[in-house]
Image (cartoon, rainbow, N blue to C red; front, top):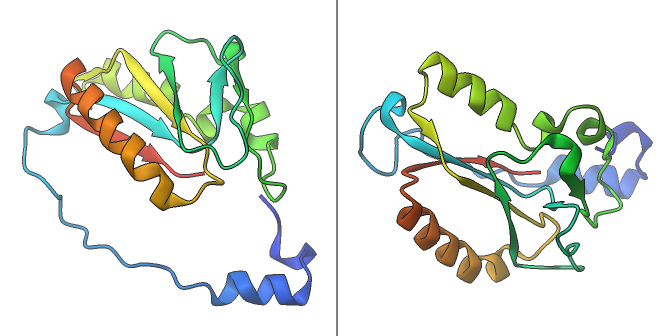
Length: 153
């Protein structure tokens, strides 16, 4: 990630003054406790498997990542020049914490993992993502996922 102290004064002011939305901490839906939920992971890191097509500039689609995908098989094609990929290169869990979810599943903190997980391109107009997100929600429901960990990058 870019450091504020290395930005131009105008860009630094833009980020410092950027409004940060506030969200209610209450759950949006009711349901079983996490220990009984099937969890899918959704990241906006622009990740895909090596044999998948890279994300295009301003892409609004997503890539399917099977649960058994090893870290070495994931590639990041995030397009933002302001994004430092070093964290991902050192530990994929920074942007795609699948190992942490596996640990939570093994310890009983969550019920199970979905068969598939997903990645969008983060440097995209969020309004363009809505149709794809609705499609993805339908697919996840059909696969039995009843919770999602959203990892904005």
